[in-house]
Length: 478
Ligand code: HEM
Image (cartoon, rainbow, N blue to C red; front, top):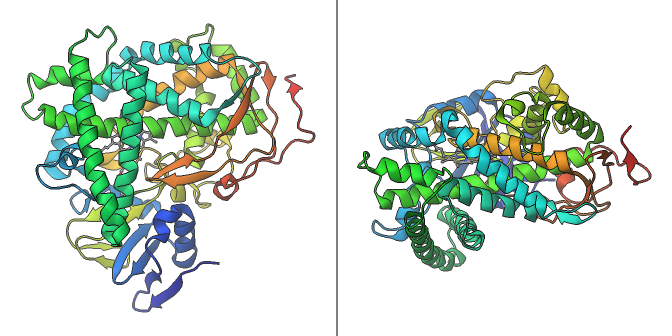
C-alpha cells in the first residue's frame, strides 16, 4: 500500500500524487514503481506546490535525453558561491550545458576514444592479476568490498596514474563521502529544514579538503615519470594547446571523472559476479566459452573480441541491476512533455531501472537471462545503462574494456559460491543501485559450477532470482 494520496484532475488528467518529496530519495525504486502503477508512463510527485516529474517510457526518455536545450543537467544542486571550492569541484561535465558542455566533450573525446583503449589494457590486466594473487581457493570473500577496493585502485591508476594504493583509497573515500553529502544537501534544496543547514556547512568544508587533495594528487603526478598511459597525463599534455584546460578546470573534471567512474563500475562487477554465482547454467556456458577462446591467464584484445556470451552476460546484468538506476534533468525553459506543460526549473527524473524492467520491452523482465540477447536489439532509449543521447557516458568504452577483461580473468581462475542464507540488500544511493550489505562468496575452482542458494534481503524486491537448489551442496561440473 502506498502512503500517497492520488489526485487526478481531468482535462488530459494530470497524473499527480501528493506526498512527501523525501519519499523519493528514501527509496527511489519503490517510489517510482508506485508512481508508475498509479499513473503510467508520466507521473508527478508533488508537495506544497513543488513538483518532481517522472518519465518511464522509451519515447519520453528520448525527448528528455535528446533535447538538451530544454532539459539541462544539474547533477550537483548545490554549486556554492562563485569563489568557493564547492563551485570548482562541481564544475565538471555533469554541471555543464549548451556550448560549454559541447566544448568539454570535444576536449575529453580523444582521451576516452576507442583508439586509446588498447593502451589501458595492460594496466587493467596487471591490476586484475594483483587482485587474483591475493585471493585463494576456499577462502570466503566479500564481493562488495573487494570490488569497491579493486575499482578504487583501477580508477586511480587509469585516470591519474596513481599506484599509491593508500592515497587512492583516501581520495576515493573522500570523493564518495562528498558525492553522498551533495545528494543529501541537494534534496534539502527541494525540502528545506534545519538538518540541511548543518549538512550544507559540512559540504563546503568537505569541498575545501577535496580540492586540496586533488591538487596534491596533481603535484604528485607531475613530480613522477609515468611509464603506463593514464588519462591525466593526456589532459596535462592537452593543456599546452587548450586554454580552457587550466588546473582549476581540471580539478572539476578530475573529481567528476573519478566519482562517475569507480562505484558505477564496482557495483556492475559485484552484481555480475553475484548473478553468475546464482545462475549455474549461465556460469557453465560462460566457462565453456572462456576456455574455448582464451588460452592463457591474461586475455589478449583479439581473444576478448570473440567472447560473445560474456558480452550478453554483462549486458543482461546491466539491464536487470543497472548501476545507474536513475538520473535527472531540469527544464531550462517551459516545455511540453506528454500531457504536461512544465514551467522552467522543473526537475524531471528518468530511470534505467524502470525502463529495463518493462514487460512490453523485455519478456520476464525481472529475470537474469543472458540468452535473450541472441534475439533482441533494443533501441538506445529502451536499453540505457550508460544513458543515451549527447550526454551519454563518456567513459562507457573504458568501463566495458575494464569489465570484459577483468571478468574474463577472474572467471578463468575462480568461480564464486554465494554463502547460503546471507542477506543481500540493494539500495539506490546517490542515483546508484548499490549493494549495501556484504556479499559473501567462497572461492571455488573454475571447474566447479556453483549452486543457487537461498538468500534473504531486498534483492528480492529488485529482481527475481531462481529457486535455490536442494540441498545446497556443490556439485562437480559434468
Ligand atoms: C559501469 C560503469 C558506468 C556506468 C553504469 C555509467 C553510467 C553513466 C550514465 C548513466 C551517465 C549519464 C548520466 C545522465 O545522463 O545524467 C554517465 C555519464 C558520465 N559518465 Fe559514466 N558510467 C560508468 C563508468 C564511467 C567511467 C569509467 C567514466 C570515466 C572514466 C565515466 C564518466 C562519465 C562522465 C564524465 C559522464 C558525464 C557525461 C556528460 O554529462 O556529458 N563513467 N555515466
